[in-house]
Length: 107
Image: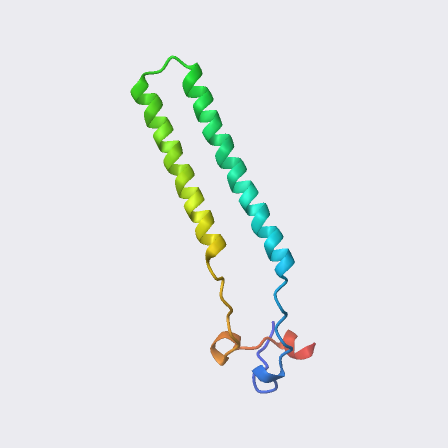
């Protein structure tokens, strides 16, 4: 069982925070965009294909298409919100770093 080592180690003694890896972040953002856009395009396409092949009522077809369009719009809005939002940084304070685990003090 790990014990706290707050008496031996302070926040100032911790190593510096690593700098963000912007290249990796951008790659992950674009891969996420490709994934969301690919899935959305696939689902909209399947909905259109199935609704045009089947002998269904026009009301049902447009209800299904309206639902998939709404889902696609919400997915794109969430994607844009994630891309434009600042993820922020959690600063080191006694509240966010306490108790400091013994493993950190040992290294």
